Length: 403
Image (cartoon, rainbow, N blue to C red; front, side, top):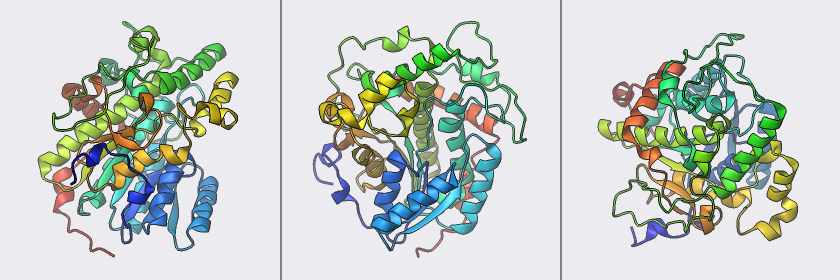
């Protein structure tokens, strides 16, 4: 590897040939997921678009085929909030694809409708973390049986203000597979003495929470003072910090931060997964990425002023802070495909506040690298989803031959 290669800008021109490889991308019908799936398919990979709305996924597949007529693209229905759907999708994927070179855990929600889902899960934490935790575990044997495979999970700048109350998480009942079971499972609330029951915010609070989420992705970028815990040989760029943002997470009530909490969980999952992969001697690696601040479907539920701020109309004025999904997806693509990527790397834009620009290796928060919390989150995630990872059994399976 050439000196400084991991810190250099990286674009689609650097994507290697993907012929003979198979990738699953969740939430690939639009935004970051679509752009990542398109880049993979254009370079010869077989790509599975795992999406909640099959009709929209079919439209996305058609757009990819129009750009790359030889693209091998498949659609797989997947609703990450439903364990029944996750298990069914995993079984179909395993049956159709004996090798899985790449799993991109990209799908996410920022401000879903209030209240628990049909099987009792707070949607943001359920989709962004628990659903992907379960899907990865259910596909693990196919992934580990494929040499040099990779698991990429998409996080966010918002993780910087996320916090997990794992004691409260421990008190929650397991996730249900039965339709209509509405046992309350909620994102952990940091307030002392808070109950574990679901809290439905008033309309004004939901609007404020939406603006907070947008602000967190666009402004809570003061990572200069955070100790990412990365090895000394990884010379990573530092953010200069944004005035007035230091301590923002401490001022915002935690019940209004389900999105940052879920994005923190994404990183903790990645780092704990990588530690367990390394302990088994697997050639599979776990990597994470964030898109900076990109115009994606996550912003559709924001308040009107925030939508204008993030919209295409102000794009020329806001290009220093907000970028298109084509550029935002590059961090995910690099995490997935860069041969120089290392186990446990975290990629994001190189520009001001890490909000825009070509992807480089970046720092995550000190909280995200707390190994004790990572382990506890893993244990609770296995309990809540009912999915246990069996690394040794998966590694004993014969490796599939390359197509």
